Amino acid sequence: MFKRFFLLSAITLTALAGANTAAAADRHVKVINKTKTAILSFYASRTSSNDWEEDILGEDVIMPGKSMVINIDDGSGACKYDFKGEFEDGEEVVKANVDVCKIGEFAFTE
Image (tube, rainbow, N blue to C red; front, side, top):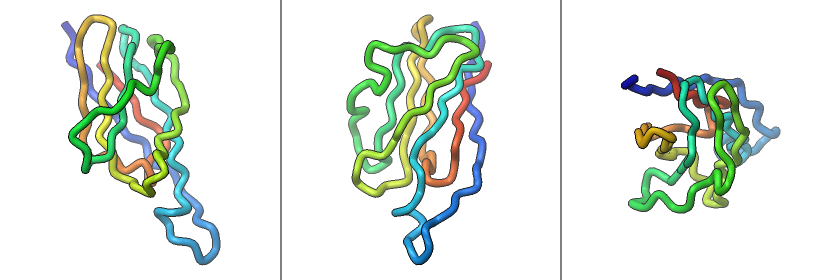
């Protein structure tokens, strides 16, 4: 069995003139599956939450080698989220404290 990991890729963010960077940040994150197993569920919950909320993918899956752009913005203005991916083989990977205001990509890797 392979151990799955994650990679974060930073992108340059441009804030609107005079606006707070966090408020103007783009919270769309490209979730990339660089594993050999489909991602069946993906969760993103504010770090202050004790609940994973609902599966963002719903009926969708992210197949190996594919990606999906996900809007992480829940309207709270928060930037820090915990991510969880659940894979077809039953494995789960959790990454805590992801700053979605500073990254543009998040990859699950083996």
